[in-house]
Image: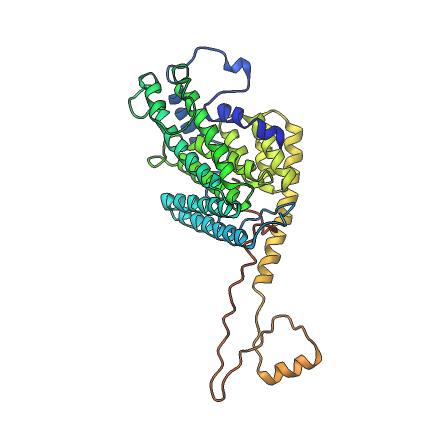
Length: 388
């Protein structure tokens, strides 16, 4: 993972701005408008691609599990992290209904909760400030993306950079292109997002959700913001910086890299994701990458692995569904008393509530269970039904 984190800035250049790792392919005349080429390449990838359509994940609790929980972590911070996780799930539900901007507000709100909780815990304002400057950098980076008939050469970069609050390139504004400036802003933003979330898994999940949201926007004509796909990469990479064991963000980042044609880096990311959690969806993504790289034998082996794991996943889902649909049988107090005298555990039997004389009993509403949303010691809740 250390090597992958070190290569993050390289991936940002290669995958987002349409560069290639093949020196021979990189030679040739420079296009007049590189960013226009990037837009055209993403449109072409959206039309015909071996990858599944961009879809937001279902709103389920995070299946991530920390390997070494922090014993010094306060109960207050744990409660804040749980609330942030719930807010992220609510954002996913909104996004699933097409309310993308409301979903974005929920994801950013979850990050604000995490940053505020960490600052309160540590008696500082470092995390909140990092989140603020990261959001500012992401917004200001859009100024380097030519819109409409405006060309890159028409951008007054020194004036734009001088007017920005983002503290990068202030002394080098005369010697950069808009593409380089955008890359620097995005790199700065992802580092600040990671600093804002600390090592909180709930923060990593909110960042990953923002990545999914922008990746979805990049595939929708008419509503995508400027540079939505590069922004998705920023959030995926920030999620991995916060929690390197985030196998879902690693898979999503691999898909984004593969869509941009950087199959070598995509292969590394899929293999890293599988080293953390063996999912059939990631194996199938790896099959596509191996075939694109001409590694037929590895592709066949990966396809066999995907089939075996998929069968196991289906069996687990069926078992979980059967357990969840187990009938609950109500019994009268006399029968319950007679059963309790002979044994202590009766699966599927719930004691009816106490009732006053002459009043009919009503089913008791059980209190809500918080155990399904955990941020310190998480257990796997299943495999997502999407490939990305």
